[in-house]
Amino acid sequence: MCATGPVGGLRHTPGVIGCRCEIAPPTLLLAVAEAGDPDVRDAALRTLLTSAALRSRRATLGPTLRRLGLSPADLAFLPAEATAAGPENTVYDVAGGEEAALPGRRVRGTTDPPSGDAAVDEAFDGAAETAAFYREVFGRDSIDGRGLDLVSSVHFGRRYDNAFWTGDQMVYGDGGGGVFVAGGLTRALDVVAHELTHGVVQFSAGLQYRGQSGALNESFSDVFGVLVAQRAAGTDAASASWLVGEGTLEPSLGRALRSMIAPGTAYAGDDQPADMDSYADLPVDDDPRNDNGGVHINSGIPNRAFAEAARALGGNAWETVGPVWYEVLTGGRLSRVADFEDCAALTVAVAGERYGGGSAEQDAVRGGWEEVRVRLRADPR
Amino acid sequence: MKVTVVRSGGVAGMVLTVEVDAAELDADAAAQLRGLVDACEFGDGPPSVIADGFGYEVAVERDDGTVERSRFGQGGAPPGAGALASWVIDGPHGHRSAGR
Figure 1: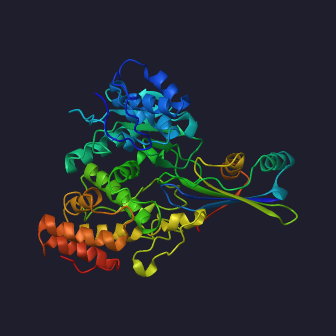
Figure 2 (figure 1 turned 45 degrees about the vertical axis):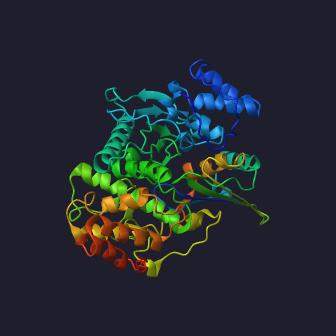
Figure 3 (figure 1 turned 30 degrees about the vertical axis):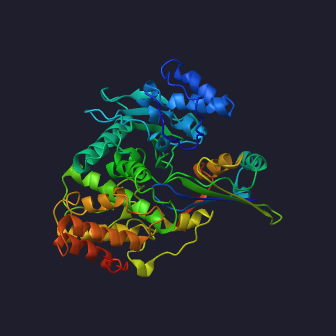
């Protein structure tokens, strides 16, 4: 079949776009798309993107899409690629390489047995667990809601102390560079799920990664990161630690990356505020110390609002407050430049829609935001 | 000559500062550092466009007091700046501190 809708970044050129999607090999089309003049490039790219052969592995095209100024979101016009078995789950070994070497050598696919490489197998299991969480709890089909393949690359860089979502795939360093313990980044399911949730945010509310919207982006990733881990472990809200990345840091630094219930207490030097009275009003500039306006700092405030609401209700947080936060994130009402008050108002409204006005759930959500001193606007309705 | 690298962000969201003073290095390490500084194009690169990407600042204070600086996001280092940052952060010569 052929694409007829608009593709971000591509000019519509009637008559140039052909429908013989299976004739030219993808590698040739890629070369043409990168080297051709604008009309040829458009035609090659459209043919490429509508190719059935590539439709099933569009996530692995990440580096090429980036070179062309596109992202997987630009392929949203393609039919959903879900199967009953869920998305493909593939892990690559980038063997110390960095961005230019992604994704690396394929080492484990969906139906393959464990590889014996702990990082590979943990990345595989973490991606599968996270996708299962979104599918079974919220009926979401993979990261984009449309069956996007799960692609992970491990052994990024040398003793690299980070894990991240590139916009189309997961990447894990080995740790051991002075911040994370070796192997800690793939071992922690909540860290894996945090990063994959950045993908969910990208394909839903698309919260801008700066200031309060950026802190909300970080907070949604922490919220669903810990919910994936709590569900996998069968931990309810009362007994959960509400720590993110517990045991991943070098012990001399501290016990976890963040505490959702007691922000600012996870490690020595943790400067997350626990409420708006301690809000860090940092500029959005190119100084790395300012963290894009405090996205990893002020996220402690909405994190605690969630944890307080979940604790107040008891039970399994992924079944009580989790669905409220999920509806806010994915329901189309949260602006990409939303601030804390916007998010608070929506969570209270959604809790009322889901559980009833004045319900224990709505009271708990409202109480969570009151605990962190985020102002709740009067309901305009 | 002192070289200071600040790295922020990442999934940890921590600010790490690592400083190397050429006067404290042996001759080989000092020569390596000078070579990396000489090969570094100072100026700013693009910020990271990915959530939890690192942000960097590399600052070189020469013995005459002049300072050159580069800021960039993960994957966006100007030529030479990434190699210099890695040498300082990952090598054994730096004084490390955490915090903003």
